[in-house]
Image 1 (cartoon, rainbow, N blue to C red):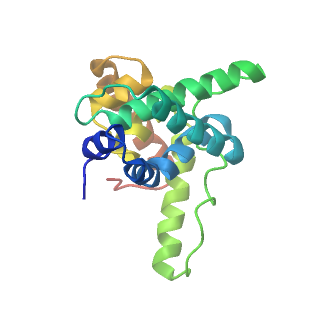
Image 2 (image 1 turned 135 degrees about the vertical axis):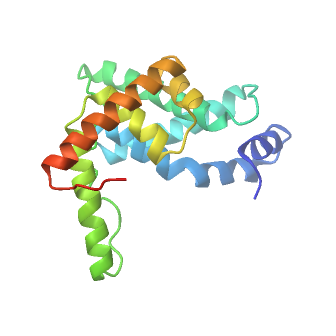
Length: 183
């Protein structure tokens, strides 16, 4: 599998199918992330497409391994502007995101996993929005601290501090819900 940097380089060289691969790779993740701010799946999809379109038009020079962070930062900025236009700024939230994942065959294991996921989302929702966003980018989007810092507009040390506080708060909330051995 080609890296983001290789696919983006191919796109810059004129291969539009490589950009399609990047959209397939990150499109759903980006919509999910944007929806955490605006709680509107249709608008989140529109903003995802706009974020990809901006990169296609601007064709910025990116260092190796920075495509995903640049994409998420672009989407975050578009989302903030979207809020300013509507005069209703919200924080990153996981509310209404549960249940949006398509249902597969519901086995007992799948039901238990879904219940764990719902508890996790509920507990995450009780944390500060900035802590929640840091946790989301690092653990759900598998970004590096440096990339998450770039997306959030803070330094790496701040991301580390946010994660430390966020994990502590999340552990407290999970304990309140009866989850003793959270890992």
